[in-house]
Length: 189
Image (cartoon, rainbow, N blue to C red):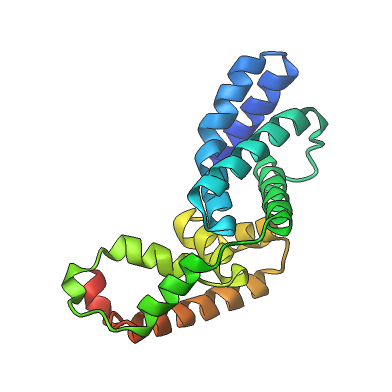
């Protein structure tokens, strides 16, 4: 976490303690709203469902903020709440696998014209098709630009596990892209 993030977290907590709730809420949302949504999207693989769970998470974060005891960084506490809300949502609702079936069908076929592929959209789809243990570290490490130690803290696992899962995720991504005829990394530049 950067020095600015620590400063912002301290400012949020100070504003909340001073009773300047509107300012604290605005600052909290500015700093975490997009991150919370992206984490929900990574867990849930569905944009509208992720929006709902992100809103529920932000409400829970705001209501729970007076009970924040400072034993962990504010961001860690927030990500733990979000992860728990996502896990609860996953347990309470069966995930529709039709989207995954379509991606699998796409992965089985070679892409006719690699230059016509929307690389960002395809990569996002392939990343989101990974199992949770690979997808979440990839999203946090590469898209959220968190360090390995921060990812480990957020996911509640050892750093070695994060490194292993990142390596396996890269290998799986490479295999899936190769299967689609998109394994040549010069296509991605």
